[in-house]
Amino acid sequence: MLNSGESFTFEREEPEKYWNIQELFKVPSYRDSGFEDSKAEGMKDLMVSGYGPNGTQAEFFAYVSVPTTPKPAGGYPGIVLVHGGGGTAFPQYVRLWTSYGFAVIALDWYNKRPIPLQDKEPASQSVQRVDLEGGERNDYIANVANMVLCNSLLRSWPDVNPEKIVFVGLSWGSWYGAIVGAVDSRLKGVVEIYCGDLCEDKTTLVNGRFLHAAKVPMYWVASTHDQNVTLESLRAAFNECPTIVTKSLVIELPHSHIGFTFDSCPRMARHFMEPDKVPSLPSLGRPVVKDGVVSAEIKSLGLGLGKALLCYSCSSKTEKRHLWKWETLPADVHGSTISARIPDGATQCYLSIYEETCGTFNDLCGTTEVVDLK
Image (cartoon, rainbow, N blue to C red; front, side, top):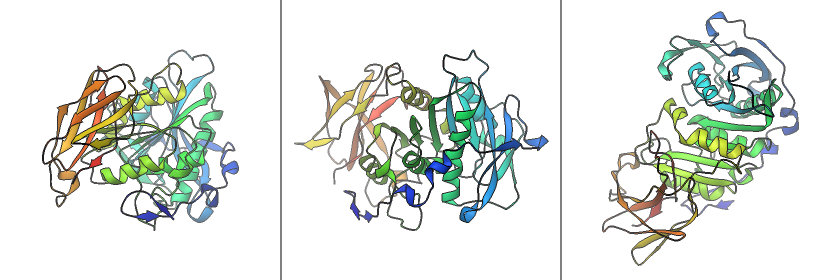
């Protein structure tokens, strides 16, 4: 049992208990889906041989697409793009990420397929879903296996660089990402959007029990106002993951598939692929509170210092966390340290450093984990 430093304990497990990893590293067979209403311009619609419940053989739907821009030396970098709850293999987000210069594979892990309606706009409501044979699939072991197989397939795709592939998971996709990062050592990194926390629910595999075994660099972008996780459960995940590079906690970040458009995500994907050429977002060490001042070591400024903030809340811990009101004050930067005096009445806080360009959703930043004050 592990004492995470939070108010609960949980049991670590090794991924090899559930997945035959070397078998998943083999390139799966695939075929054209044959569904005319699932076709989307500029991408292949496939049925890929994978797994269903209880280890059965089953197919899953996926789009694969490569950019139209000139191929870089070594091939296009790749993204395994994994949707969240109620989502699918969104052709509009495949198109968005190929516009960034990435080859993309996006699966539907529900065992459904998309029917694009207005697939040129990045809006999740523009895609209908249709059940495939076998019904809805919510088997964690099978879904993780199929996500690893997506990487195996993308690595084999013509003109794709197999040494530059990153997993990007959103909401439920980020809970899966917290497992895939411990299973698939071939990935260059994992981008976690919203979730992937550590919690005490012992009935599900997506509770952070594999985070200790993460094999690749990981990054989180998450919100102070998320109903699906808490800042405490995220803090536990950050502290448990040995390969975390940095994290971005953002006040009132919206939770939907719009998270695929966050500026921080392609930036960190590029950093994982080419760390010597693309800087990470800013990175801060663990916060320390002394004499009413919170401080942290600045490990990296990313592309440079734009602003430094103390983010804090005076809300009562009897209130629901996603309803807390958060405010900001300027923080001080002296050499390699960021610090700020904590306002009277604050119950939680964290420090944040932004680059000069903050991003459309204010997410081009690096933060500490949250600090409990009362």
